[in-house]
Image (tube, rainbow, N blue to C red):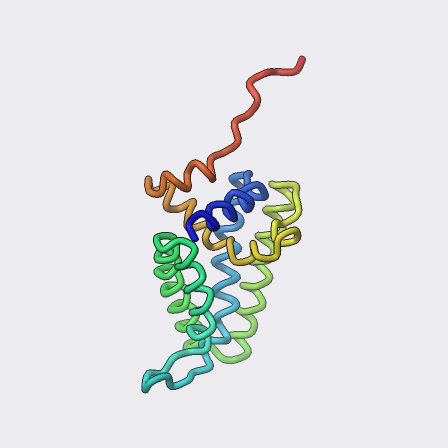
Length: 172
């Protein structure tokens, strides 16, 4: 699936060239994931004698998809997912139900706002998932790939995500 992932990433990056839009996506994706999983961490099931939250159960299929697209990037997301699920669980365990839903609304609203500002203000283009609904699942992969590249890993993806060179010819 590496070729498929690289083709999807190449298409996705066309909607995410502005560095400020990319930064807004980092913030937005973290807020959206944490917000979306927050209420799900309060619902638990016993799976083979182990208590597991609904957040974990629902996150597993998309995690498997990400791991199939690219094992390295998927493992990076797994680590991030563990941290964010832990944060959501800690919040859910410490606050009242009303406060949890208030935090949920703030996180989701802020996450959507960050994505919207990124596209409208900085990218001046509609979100990629409007044209390609499957790109909804590529955002975390894109952000993690950018992190890996910034840390000096994944040169194969760096070529795909590289900024478009500006035209060196000036118009007078």
